[in-house]
Image (spheres, rainbow, N blue to C red):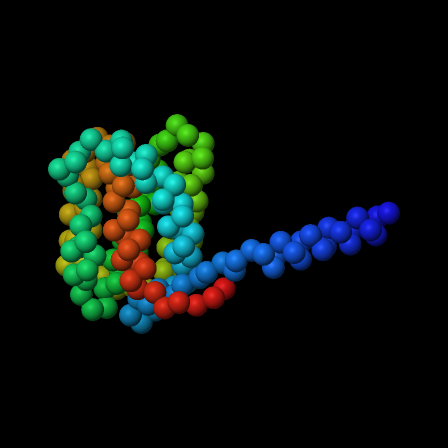
Length: 176
């Protein structure tokens, strides 16, 4: 009886593993360094919290991250900018973003944990930042602190799409 139950369980696990899609990992090309990121997973978690963040954003005229900030990165500064942006989100945004819905709390936590993991991997890259790159992120911080903290966090989460698009533009597709 026990062998039969074990055999059925193993067959079920094998069937499930065949039906599930492999986790897609992408390699971010950061000049002299590369980092593996699950961009599809990040996008899924973000999609589940985005509408709540945008609906709660009452500061429509204020923009923390604009696409030009991310696109006008000097050669050799992609690693630095990503490290600084991830630090901003982990230390300032996710720690101050709150949702009353448990499902959204889980997605926010998953995003934050993913960002922490990416930061840890980037730390190995020893990115060197030039003054211009630091100034760009300082501008984001300055706009962030002008707003009430929970409002600023909602705005930053709502604008996370800009960061994810930029990250997706840095990828070399691989399979994990």
